[in-house]
Length: 79
Image (cartoon, helix red, strand yellow):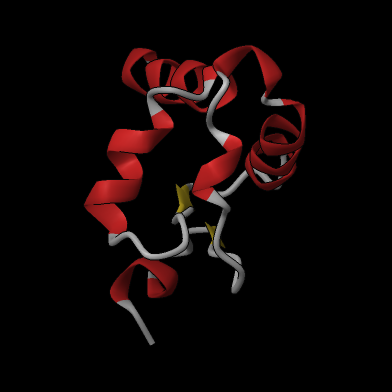
């Protein structure tokens, strides 16, 4: 079992990956925003979300194009 779970962290790590084709056009991200919001609302201390065909760091770069994810990331820095 990972150390962060032993320490009591609540982890959100969905089995499914997100579809990168839903990122663009940016003004039409309703489906993707809904998916991301659903995962973030689970309130995990640690949240792993990845896009199909992309590793974790590649996915992180894509999240800056998603308003809901970007706002969540910036809230973490303020906490």
